[in-house]
Amino acid sequence: MQLDKEKEYIKPLEHAEDLDPLLEKIGDSKYVLLGEASHGTHEYYTWRAEISKRLIKEKGFSFVAVEGDWPDCFEINRWVKDLPGTPANIPDVLKNFKRWPTWMWANWEVAAFAQWMKGYNKDLDTKNKIGFYGLDVYSLWESMEIIVNYLEKEDPEVAALAKRTADCFEPYRQNDSYVTAYRGLKQKCRNEVVQLLKEVRQKTSQYENEPEAGLNAELNSLVLKNAEKYYEAMAQFDHSSWNVRDSHMVETLNTLTDYHGEDTKVIVWEHNTHVGDARATGMAAQGLHNVGQLVRMQHSDDGVYLVGFGSYGRFCDRRRFLGRTHEKNGPAKRY
Image (cartoon, rainbow, N blue to C red; front, top):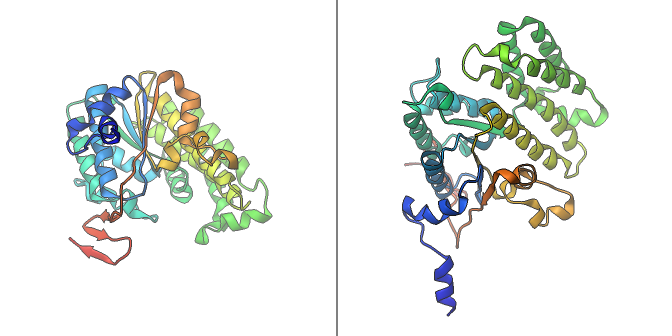
């Protein structure tokens, strides 16, 4: 009897067609959040890609947003949309990922999915091409450099504000010491980054010298604003930095959906701890929220479907990074 009941709910997952029951349950949901029990595991990436392909082809999803840094992932986005000035090959794009852990997104599974996206986008109008974006808050210095360089060319007046913002942060750049320095400072750089974001948002439409240039400027500015809050929270030695980070990821997601229009349908790739609903876990007792909870609270009327990923038994936890395989408990090997 128990075995029969298990067979009713447990289905093999070997081919893309085996995803039919999941696609049926997702239905018309506009938000599909796909988890993983560990970063970098080959099977999780492969199956998230297979689910995403079907959602894009069969249900008209608009973009994939991942637990990655905005500047690096935006280069993948530019490549899959074949925008001017992108490298010929995806491995050259993935070399932009320099912050540890590089293997989290610079791996062959992401490369294969990006190749598929570029092929799928080939015959689509620019506005309909499927995007790939990063939601995370860690790229303080990279985003700052990008926004200063961009505004110097496009908007010298706002560029002066961006330079003042950069000057505010510059003393703490060595070894990412802003978190340490902030313990003795209050509001040191906040006014500058808030004003910069306000200015950029007001002029976003003027920055469209190439597709999504204004979006890129706005979201790099948003990273600066929320990274400042994140590092301040880190200095408090409590759990508040988690809430700042996940709130930033949802704010970024909302900015992306607003940019793409009311018919937008979104796929999110993140760890289970982010895409699950914190209210159903011990996180709630600690005062923590996460992406899954916030998206459900804000967009339940649009349909939100959460998919957790797990493994049975012991697995290898293999990271495949641009020609190298890293074993969790052993040295890197060529394959």
